[in-house]
Length: 107
Picture 1 (cartoon, rainbow, N blue to C red):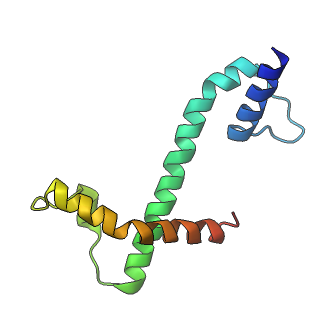
Picture 2: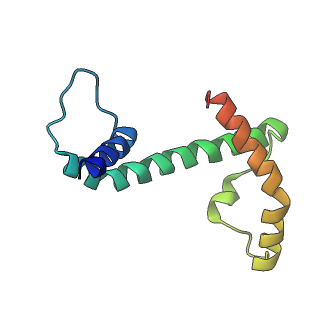
């Protein structure tokens, strides 16, 4: 049981770090129950950072590019198959951008 508590504490401290010198009134179980929402929020916020970074890169190369239609999703005249091809085509570039962004963040 102690091993499980120790592992749970590591997880909750990772997703909801305690403030220095401030005791947390919540129990370990309460903090563990909140962990999925904290992780989801973290993923959502980082996704926004990554997408913004990519659009910033696009605008840095093509300042007049109108990226607003991208918020509507895939172009109406693009098939699922063609979109899958595009995804495969840009995969290596996407991975490189994410690696570079991680380096920029000091990771």
